Image 1 (cartoon, rainbow, N blue to C red):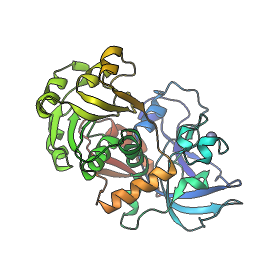
Image 2 (cartoon, rainbow, N blue to C red):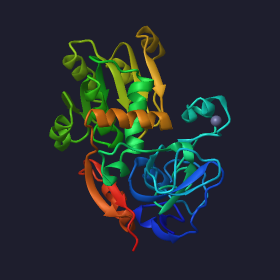
Image 3 (tube, rainbow, N blue to C red):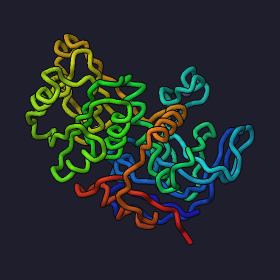
Length: 347
Ligand SMILES: [Zn+2]
């Protein structure tokens, strides 16, 4: 089978076409022949060495799986060869209390497709069968190819972690990014008031169209007057929920948080470390919650909610997998708005 991967970390140019033997499923596993996948920030971090983790080379990145079940291993039930599926992104040991209760994302031995094992930039991907779900029929193959990771982690952040309730206000950092856009659309559909935060003046209008009640242009590295702006917009109360996929300084987030508010964090593109004024934190009865990925159950719930509420991904560009390097360049461009789709089309 064909795949795009890399033998050394570096810029987009390290991505190369690689011929690999097709994986075969073991017990309770399936393989999926990919139609589409999309570029996620994790792919960029893996390719550039930005995760600072050790992994063997060559590596095949890619986390979003959408395609057709190719082979089914022994013991698999509920999924058959030829089924159209999407998959969740994380699996655990399969035997601990968390894994057995459908919280594989909380397993201490969690592994992610395209991070710890080869991912969706290969024509065929192997995974435990429980990760695959049959997606709602209203979505096109293209749409399905760019939804799993961003949709499910945004759902986990808002629903499982922040326990968002109708009428609350959510600040969404990195709102024009992959999970930022899904968080914005989900929050709106959940009946929240939304304050979208972007570094780009040009993206303000598009964010309003995507459902933002207010848009604030703000760069965390500039240490601007963001908390004051939020207080103005919320009548001096602050926001109940902060969705932070970029790593805004925690003290700044606490300053714009309403009493008993929740900060959910799952990214570090702006900051990877942050100091915390402990007294301000507990005086506000604030919560700081970390999330990564989402369970197969959450992926299923997220798709059902998205379908019911007419949520569709915003797609910026579609490229063949052979142009993955160009796709990575576009991903890092400040002009890009929406998902970058990659199509497996090898003949
Ligand atoms: Zn486990």
